[in-house]
Image (cartoon, rainbow over all chains, first blue to last red; front, side, top):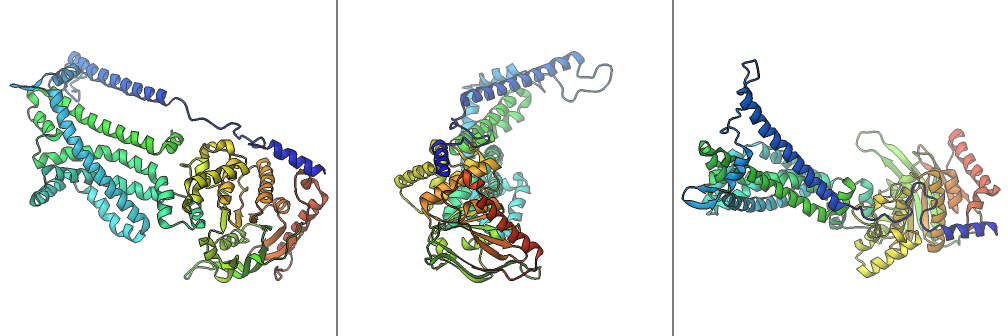
Length: 319
Length: 271
């Protein structure tokens, strides 16, 4: 039987994909060069840092040479280039390694790092709390269009009210309940955190195609199984995008929250103090700003690291 | 090859389906469908777009409910059959979850049904062997070609040994060569598992090549125009596609479709 023979031959030879146009013939291995990619990222960061430093010092040189005016005109350069307005970068770095105050041997850098650690703890607590609230709201809204329509305007409105107006209120209410001041700061930080997480959780939970949901229905999966085995994994890349935004927002929330709450141990007070006494040491304010920015950077890097552990598949697809 | 005249696995009795609600225009997708499918059959639902063949498949699988009439599967109403996990479904898109490896995708229904891990993994290996993807167990869906993805979808659908395999234009998105290869693979799998298959397609050669019976449907409203038995010998392979009887059957189906289009909108023949 010719047909039988040919079919048998086909089946014997069919392992894998010989007839597949464009198909892979061997299983692909994991993408190499994760380490190389990290090196490239660090290199890019340093390169931009060098460019920024060169621009800063170059502007100072240029301004000094031109007496802060465009040559031949009366037109002033936007920022004065003297050492009060724009301290030298090396002076900022040097300030970090000098005692912060007279009569106190503590270096500015250790003082700022202690403040940063304190503020980051508030921010991290606010970030965790806000993310949980954001996820909960997003999950709730994804289940009920009625709740979404009813509550979403308030969620949006909450973010248009200036934080400077909200923060003292939370601190006063917290005070009535005898909370430690740091709790109020955490809540202020959470207040800035939850919004992006709510929006992206909602979007992510609704992202699976109808056929992906029907597949679950065909297995008679429960609502809980559909949530945890389909909707949440599908939402993770969306949620992590929001978490990266929230990580920076939580630090800002903590710093701003520290100001009216009278907390003296955090970056908020440090920034306030050095801007008060700016003329005494402008480089101290800049040094404090650099440390505050580093807190945000490190926090986002931390979140990205967790994302890499939790969603390796997506990450490799999107990069 | 003939099918024994046992009790039907699927009994579609006077089923109609209309879409639209309120004051909007009602579209009758299916009108008074009667069809019996017996165990081990390979039935193709064939027709032009808009004939309701996919809707009929979704009614069998309880992904949508009939406006009137009823669908019995293994003697039970379709919703009960779905809860009893009688269906394995394959869609036009493979619908693999791309955060899961190939093996984890195949295990998905078994996870839902709370099989123990060891059993799940053993079953996934078995299924991947069946669809010839053993070496790809730990790769991710987007690393596979369209045909390979669809093979994973078939493995997933069969992983829990459902009594019915419902396929909605599963090869519709594949190129012609991959498609013919997949048809052979599917017949091979069907020969090994003896699962009852309902297969929706708008390709006449595909329907004739695969099926033991081709249910020809016509549109507006969707109904059964006729049923053609395909008694070509099995196993079918390359030679089948060159067999004069194959072309004869294709012509027969095509004539029936054309008659439906041009002839008087007569009463649809039913099984």
